Image (cartoon, rainbow, N blue to C red; front, side, top):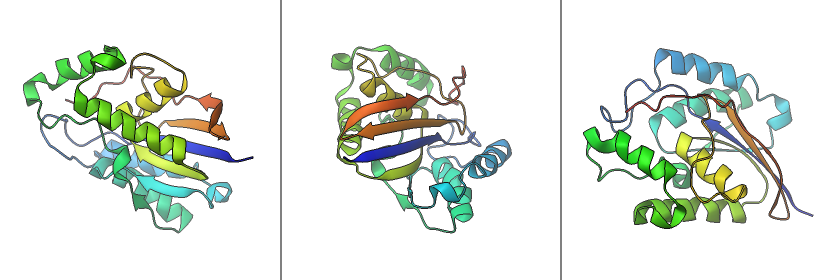
Length: 186
């Protein structure tokens, strides 16, 4: 019997908006949020693999966790935010709302591929991991596991923990992070 426990931590508050900076780090509040969430990861989690999205705000959220664990972490491109490089800054908010609510078969091809890669990672992963990542990544995995027809599922707050327990690849338990009506900085 193979058991897997994955803890998805949404990054802390970003220093600037998505449309103003392609890869902002954490704001001062975000840095405090990251420090605070790191305190939750005691020795109990010392055997968990530490993974982060390649985006600065996710890396900066993982750094205090890794420091507390006295270990290194790996960058994993599967956990990068939703692909939107070809969307004009002034149109990103409307685009994101549309994608968030669209049926899966109506998603843009780049988003379908990104979603597929996340699900493929989840289905193939064995072990335990703490992952710092993004709002939409967490939604994709939660909506997939609960068999939704959209990638929308809930609104995880900054540095909230969404936990997934799998046994032999099947969902055993899903614990959602703080469901906040958070604003995605655009």
